[in-house]
Image (cartoon, rainbow, N blue to C red; front, side, top):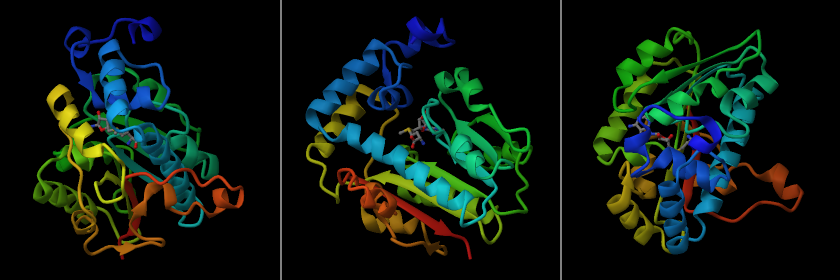
Length: 272
Ligand SMILES: C[S@@+](CC[C@H](N)C(=O)[O-])C[C@H]1O[C@@H](n2cnc3c(N)ncnc32)[C@H](O)[C@@H]1O
């Protein structure tokens, strides 16, 4: 990373252990990662060859979900938790292209994401973006900080893409989602992606074991039933809880480019 962006805070510790935000960036073809991230990323790919497809499908899902929310659903506020390093088509870029007045709060706890956050903080004049350095396990702190940019009395899209898999205890993850969704009004939406062992993905289990022994933070896959537990009390939008690569791909499918099926659930649900 320092080749591209200069010395970063926390560099010495960060250089020795692969971290999810940077490895994810590597799989997405970005430049913000260290050698250790490339090595672990390559090892995971050798065990689980479709992981690059998972990362790309997850980002494409983000684009389609936010396009729907900013367009047909009329959502003007986004709370994107577990943002990741800036890449192409970040949430505010997708939303503000459709709704220039969209307001976006990004949340991550990786110091490297923080140092790159300025790339996320561009905005239209009509809209707003901000960045909160916080742990997803502390929803109250997130809501407090987000309320500086978002009006929590109006509908919010709570986005948790590839993040609940780092909250290993399912009861804790469920209670975090509930806390956040309880704090936003009717008409708000929850947008999730989550890895699973139930949609194929050869080598996924072995790769996760390798990850948990060699990288941080530790990760878990979840079953359909466990992910459905996050959606209790919400109206799940069509086509339901599916591989994120198959969520509303009709427009792409017409072009004959649906992309490979990946072992990552994607879902959008509305608070009634
Ligand atoms: C797999 S990446 C997903 C990035 C983006 N949401 C996407 O879908 O492309 C997960 C992100 O969650 C962040 N993360 C992991 N555990 C976290 C926690 N406890 N609190 C806040 N962020 C966390 C990581 O730093 C990383 O940037």
